[in-house]
Length: 369
Image 1 (tube, rainbow, N blue to C red):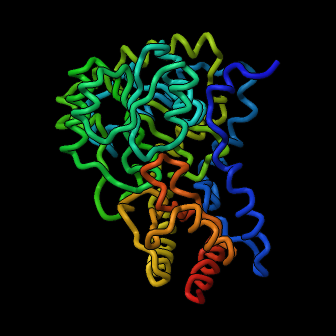
Image 2 (cartoon, rainbow, N blue to C red; image 1 turned 90 degrees about the vertical axis):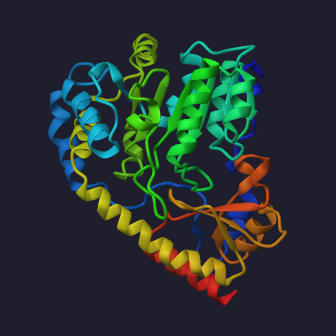
């Protein structure tokens, strides 16, 4: 049988740059793959140790809601790091990596045909994929007023943004909160890159001055993948409205969507330790400090890029696909901006998630261009 759900989905974007990947791989010094935001640095020792130490103690099933210790660690992290409203256990929920959550949030909230999901004009593709899986319609806009008027069921925002690295001001976040509440929509704020603000300080929608001291109608999505280099652990969590998270918990219990027990224990330890996050910030900041000027010297303009793990780059009037080809001739692979929406068609996303050696090699190639 063919068709069905897969027929609603776009082509998998990475398949469309296979030729550029092959061309970049032909470089004598090998490919510098700056196209995907996959961590390459070591998992913090505390996380590895916690995972190993607890592996033998999980003969039974973990709970979907997570251990009491993990829920406490999530609450403590959000209140300590993001100055959120005081949270109870009912305000948090671990998830099996945030991509799974993004792809299924509309479906799990009961959103479907005839409903509208709002996403940014340049956005992580899975926001749209999640709406399509649920059969909902999609509106791409960066204007809270337009979103409010459209009466959506769900609004996605993302700061620091993927792919652009833009950081929303507290005033803009407040406008999104007001728009969602006025229209009766759920506001889902993707804050997974929050630890990586370079030119501005990110904020959570759950900060009291942004949400009027209540998480009602709001969900903040966080991940340990980037902050703790544990993308392979599939370790994420939600914080926010107890009513919405209670609904998600009920659905996810039926679906068996539980974070593995040893991963829950590792999350508990990692959320309580900020030293390893600072170490990782310094790594990315050092790579950014050499890659950005090399791109600029090669004729690129860097737009936005105040945060996250990417540089949002443009080169004259060339399309993103043309830029990808130019870079591939030099053994460098980047992601074309049209992966993230038509508004990004003249840009490429260049990731900082490569080893120091590969970043240095990319810089040398750009300098020789």
